[in-house]
Image (tube, rainbow, N blue to C red; front, side, top):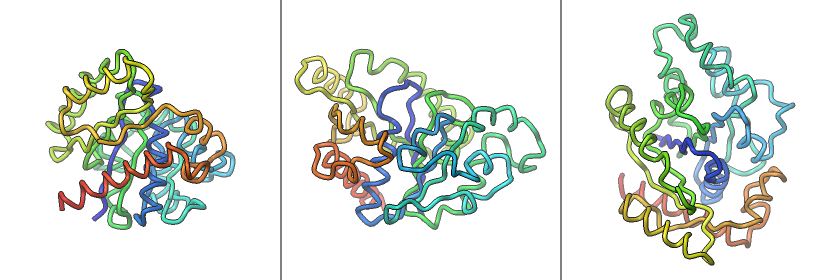
Length: 262
């Protein structure tokens, strides 16, 4: 059975979408069959992996409103083992539409995505969900559908700001919607190792989350910020870069942790 992992942090600019794209591509390169679900109305994961928004006929929006299945809306990327369920701007209004009882009757508004994901879960090794930078109904759907979450945390001042609110959202989901939800790991991102502040934040996060923090730390690199504008993960844009090495190491950590858990 595949594992569903949401990448979540309601604070923007922490490397969440960059991580979703590059972790998905790295896991695929290591032989795992991956479905990347773009749940952000900004569609950055969709375009960052190389899809043209104008060419998308069906998206996660159609899955939510019941006019398409996940299989019908999923797009095969040009990278082996990597599939994408894209987003478009229509997703921004889905919270209002989910209030309508005629969308998937009998399924609560917080479980619409889980209802659909459960049908395809066995077809993939990992399903990675790029959540929007907000704790609304879209993110609640992601948490309800997920087995675990990865929390990217930027190595900058106020890194822990908002984390308490995020952890409360996770605990609420555990208590009311998805008792099996766990924290897969905490990922330190955008580290500038030249500054004392960055290293201090690393220590602060590690002392707060203990063994949940990945050994891999994602450095702050221009190449990582350039890659999405070319519609490529870093392993395709610059395979020999430190960014490629970091995300491949992260993918190996994820695979190892789940092999040990099983």
